[in-house]
Amino acid sequence: MAESVRVDVWLWAVRMYKTRSLATAACRAGHVRVNGERAKPAQPVRVGDEVVARTDRDHILGVRALLVKRVGAPVAREAVDDRTPPPPPRTEAPIPILRERGAGRPTKRDRRDIDRLRVR
Image 1: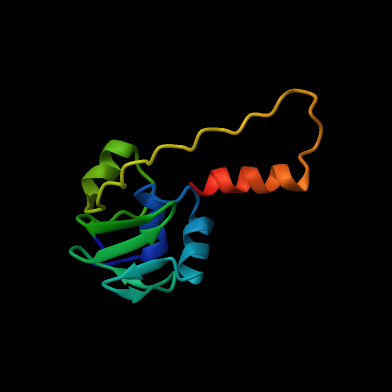
Image 2: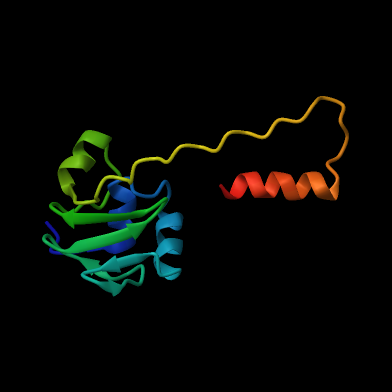
């Protein structure tokens, strides 16, 4: 078995990115860090390394096993130690501002009133 695997291949294999080319693009864009440093797509990953990958938020992943091929979700879960903190609780959505049907476009005064309500 190999001692290391490319970081883009590993991220694709553990299902962090849908395609390998997306994982490669994320590495090139600086969205992937290995042990705190920016990772190029071909950077090797070893068991015990910490990988931070940004998708919708930053995911902190520990490398438990090296994968070269994409595997099913249960196997991928065993290869990753997910240390990502839970997302913050959602805040309440503001009450939508409703206008009477057929009232036309808002005037400048209406727009200011709407903006004032949204700030609160």
